Length: 358
Image (tube, rainbow, N blue to C red; front, side, top):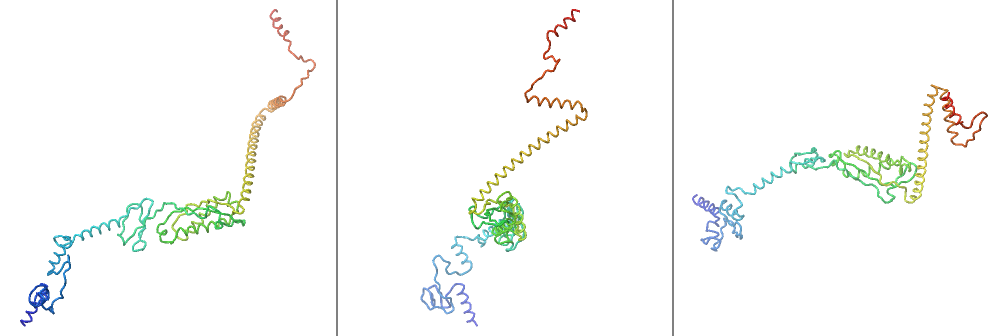
């Protein structure tokens, strides 16, 4: 029994002191060692290990291991045994939580929150809060930015040709202006929204142009076409749940096909000339009508005076008419018998003197 206890104590000492076995030290020069002393290797001891340069080497206890580790890493541990990098990690985690949980949303922006990939809510303008990343992610969306999609090229192309109601082809190039109304639908409802808006615009434009004539499409009916296309696009996009608002459609080019473009230009020039003649005739008609209305108003005033004194008014109108007529023609005066063509000035001058002498 004593032998067994003795062997157990020796075995424990060998592990604690890194001995090679009961026959001696593995690293010393004692009897029975297998180290530098050249003795036989103990069957119960650990195999010999070579120390690495600058490494921890063989240690005898946990304190020695911590001491050698501290020396190896340049004293990176505090006096109480806690590593400084834990404090740095805690500060980094705190900053991460603060900066990923607080969000500044501009007045024209909205912040869409996704929690673990699923829509959770929308942040309004101002400072918004959420769970830190990667639990919550906030995507800012500008809802007031007007975006433009150009459809059709400025150069004549067969891809831009649209059929009108009178079986004519027209070459159209136009643009669509839109902005975001619902950020949630904008982000998650439709995969490629801009391509969808372009296709909806083409469909609406072809449907509207198919109901008008060529003259309306290249002339005065363009504004009406733009309004109808915008309304049709908005209705389709609302049915799709796109979450956008169509601000307007602008037709930049509205021409007949290139093969007949010159002939159509001549027709258009003739139509413009005819329209100018019509406008001049209407202006002249307005002037004549205004003059006639003025003369009628003047006659009404004269008639009112005539009803008050018919004879006087008749005589005055006669005199005014004769004056107007005779002032424009050559006159011949015929003297009637007994009419003195001149005044007898001496006789008239002598009559007052005769009265004075009496």
